[in-house]
Length: 412
Ligand SMILES: *[C@@H]1O[C@H](CO)[C@@H](O)[C@H](O)[C@H]1NC(C)=O
Ligand SMILES: *[C@@H]1O[C@H](CO)[C@@H](O)[C@H](O)[C@H]1NC(C)=O
Ligand SMILES: *[C@@H]1O[C@H](CO)[C@@H](O)[C@H](O)[C@H]1NC(C)=O
Ligand SMILES: *[C@@H]1O[C@H](CO)[C@@H](O)[C@H](O)[C@H]1NC(C)=O
Ligand SMILES: *[C@@H]1O[C@H](CO)[C@@H](O)[C@H](O)[C@H]1NC(C)=O
Ligand SMILES: *[C@@H]1O[C@H](CO)[C@@H](O)[C@H](O)[C@H]1NC(C)=O
Image (cartoon, rainbow, N blue to C red):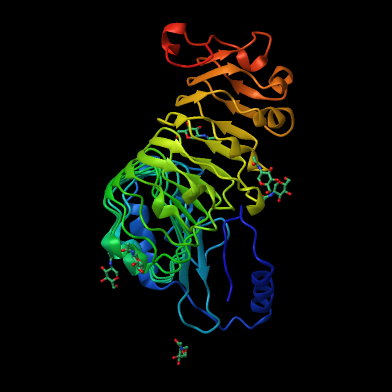
């Protein structure tokens, strides 16, 4: 077996050894590319607008007067082949195009490259639908088509890709629903559908039991947060129309990065997410949450570093127990309806570990904890509250609310 890569890529040592072995062998092998594969490559090239195939592009090196897999290193850039040791035909295993701005369609003939493991069309100008025949690529492990102009729905047949680990369809104009039987993709660990026009409810995804990263940001998904597999580590659901509570996230113990900002979620930000001890970054900002309930988590060794909850309807006193998150450095609770005074315990943190504290646009009252006067290491703002905020304190830059807005708040 021998593999051919584009010159920009590094050959694995194993392949080099096999290449040497092949060169030492009498050249009795006269394998050439399976005709179906060659015809598919030809169809791929023919579906691209010739004006967009610039002289320095990979596709300009696809010269069909020679055999694709037998050609020299400077021809057929962007493909990788499997060359068998017997006299059976060579097969195309990777199509990895350059991000040069190819304009055109993805031909249904792609489905005939039945040994394909990698298909990468990132950062081009492919338009039209993703062909249904993609589902025939049973050996595909990585499908990346991000930043193109693909339209239409995810083909139902995608559920046939039962070896796929990585799917990135972000930054297109895809629409419709996530197929419910996407859970058939048992080996999937990365799925990004962000920045498209998908809509509808998100199906129960618990069956994707190897899923590590799920990016559904900037679409129009609505309804409740879905049931998610416990394997999940990163979820990006920013800018959708999701509603309901955070309860479905309870028990996702491996979660590290959790972003559900800019949706219509409501209820309480509580132990359902705050007790997930691996979460490092939690962004629940710009929703309709009304309460932030923090208990003392110090014995759970929490990982939380960033808490973003700005732009909600959070009421009541600032939670004292925020100080129990030992690794917390950045807090944004701006644009809420917090009232009462700033807990004295925050003073110690401002002096030691907190680096960013945004509490502006609330209804906080009273004096600042003493340490705030020396809070030179902390960025942020306390403006637009009802505080007694000395103008020589850095965090006090910007005005407080006019007293007419502070009526009913104590200690004005
Ligand atoms: C290889 O070639 C030999 C002789 O031409 C033929 O008999 C044999 O069937 C071929 N094997 C394959 C796998 O094509
Ligand atoms: C795939 O290959 C088959 C068999 O050679 C052929 O009949 C068919 O037209 C090909 N499909 C496409 C979409 O080119
Ligand atoms: C979600 O799917 C899993 C596994 O397929 C199943 O066990 C569970 O009951 C489903 N949950 C709901 C709420 O339908
Ligand atoms: C949190 O989400 C909001 C809204 O999507 C965004 O503006 C902000 O930058 C995010 N915060 C961090 C720290 O990523
Ligand atoms: C907290 O931060 C320290 C220092 O960066 C790190 O060693 C430790 O593992 C962190 N703790 C958790 C629970 O992430
Ligand atoms: C949280 O609990 C720990 C251990 O019991 C204790 O040392 C710490 O003072 C508590 N923190 C707060 C803010 O009550």
